[in-house]
Length: 355
Image (cartoon, rainbow, N blue to C red; front, top):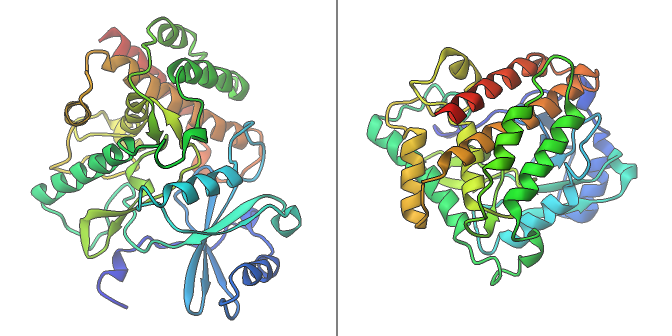
């Protein structure tokens, strides 16, 4: 075991409700990848609250399996076939995408579509960096800039030259998002959360035109990145392409910064932090907006709209997950208080609108 191995993201035992027939999956996988030998051990990564991610370890090779969550799924969400094909197409123009290995559309194997990809071994930054990884303020700033630069790199890919014209619907993205997330919220609403009517109306009334059409990740966060264990300021992988599409780059940045809890945020914000954005050296949300817009030659004049949109969208995602817990479709205790997270995001949106 090398000294850097202790920094790697460690999977855990598979949760009882999320087990699968290992023999059936391994038998299928050996037909797809004939070089595989032996019986695999299965572990589960705990990070994702949406699609489920497993480590399949054969004696000489580690693979990653992705499948949809158990329970009710929003229409059009958790499309494993699309997620696989998007990454397969992107790999040649955006090398940080993992290599796709096999896609299964045979429901008899696991009862759902799933796919298998190469494991990118490295550090996944969770709420805190690994205990034995220490970055000084300058190194932390460089990591932060690397995170934003990797997003800019994606937004600058020539999607037409890459043959990715079919990835999304193109123009009119802003309006589709406001309408779409509003409808999803209505479907996932439970009795104990806000209606969001005033915020949704404000978003509707203040909608700008799309500033550009680019490839957007749509869930770009530090815990979807893989850092080089020997050089942690370098990003070697970008994961979780479930929601990637063609859309407005400022909407993508708004989504990213909805998760960006900085050092001076309130106590509830700090409790909800899931990436190490509070460290000395990390840029503030406003500094990131300024840095990004300067590099992309975009205006920051209307930033409040994208800020509010990002937080509303995050509230809908949180509520969709909570809906599954509320209706006993998952027993994962991590989701028990997500309705409170919804209230907090509602308050933050109202505060941003008031300025």
